[in-house]
Amino acid sequence: MTLANKLTIFRIFLIPAFLIAFVFAGAAAAWALLAIVILAYITDALDGWIARKYNQITTFGKFMDPLADKLFVITAFICFVSAGKMAAWAAAIVLFREFIVDGIRMLAASEGKVIPANQWGKWKLFSQIILLISLCVDRIYNYDGGMVSSILIYVMLVLTVVSGWTYLRQNWKMLKFK
Image 1 (cartoon, rainbow, N blue to C red):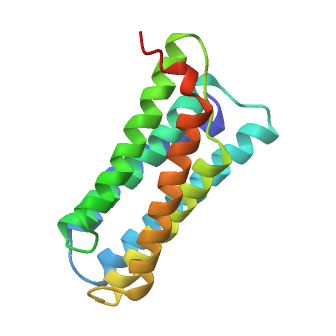
Image 2 (tube, helix red, strand yellow):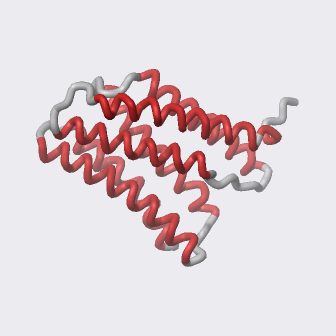
C-alpha cells in the first residue's frame, strides 16, 4: 500500500475522532475539533501531492480519496446541523450533489472508466474545509451564528452546485437513458 493511500485511510479514521470530540463540550474539545479538521485537510492535500510526485496514483486512491473527503465532510456537516449551526437544507444540497457525482462515477466504473476529481470539485472541497474551520472557531468562542460562517455556507453551496453541474455536464454520456 502506498503512502498516499495510507494517508487516505488515516483520514477515514479521523471521522470517529471528530465525532468523539464533537460530543464533548468545552474549549479543549472545540480546539480538538479544529485540529482534526485541519489535519484532515493537510492529509488530503499531502496524499494528492505524494501520489502525483512519486507516481503513486492508484485506482484505490482515485476512488477512496474523494470518498474519504465526502465521509468526513458529510459527517461534520451532520454534526453541525444537529447542533443548530448549519441549516439542514444546506447539508441536503451537499448530500444531493455527492450522490449524483458518485452515481456518475459508479456508472463510469461499470464501464471500466475512472473519473478523477476535477478542479471545481477541489475548490468545492476547499470551501467545505474552510467552512468547517470557521464553524469550529465559532464553537471555540461560543458564537451562536457567526457572520463569517453564514457567508461561507453560501459560498460553499455555490461551489457545490457548480461542481456538481460540471460533473453532470462533462459526463452526461454516462447516463444512458434506455
